[in-house]
Length: 169
Image 1 (cartoon, rainbow, N blue to C red):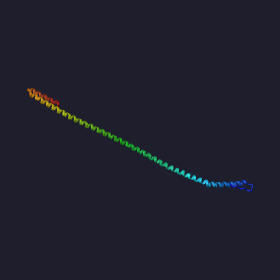
Image 2: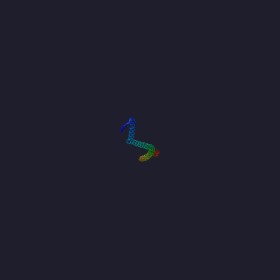
Image 3: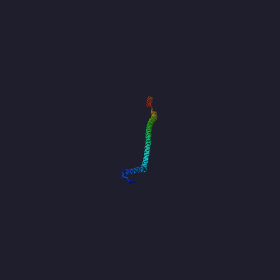
């Protein structure tokens, strides 16, 4: 500090002036070395904050768009899943119908095969019966030839044989 000793008796005015000059000098020094860097730092901080706010706004817009895109993708995925489920149900019904149709065809084929086997067995049995009847007729004829038969007995045997044939057919 600068101390000025005045020879006059008014030292208060001199002290005030000196104090004011010292205060102004101090303000200039503070302004030069402290205030300007402080204001510069505040301006930089303001720019950083404004940049961060702008970036946050851009990110909000981006996240909103991403959210909308995700919701649309989810909606599309659900629609596709529903279509896949419907197609699977339709395909399973077709497979079921085909299996039922094949089963009915198999039953009809088995039924026809069984009917054919029954008819063949019937024909075979009838042929066997006819052969046995023929064998019996031959045996009867042999017996008739071995013994003497009257004409009435012969007619009776033939009529019985013919009646037996009618019952078989």
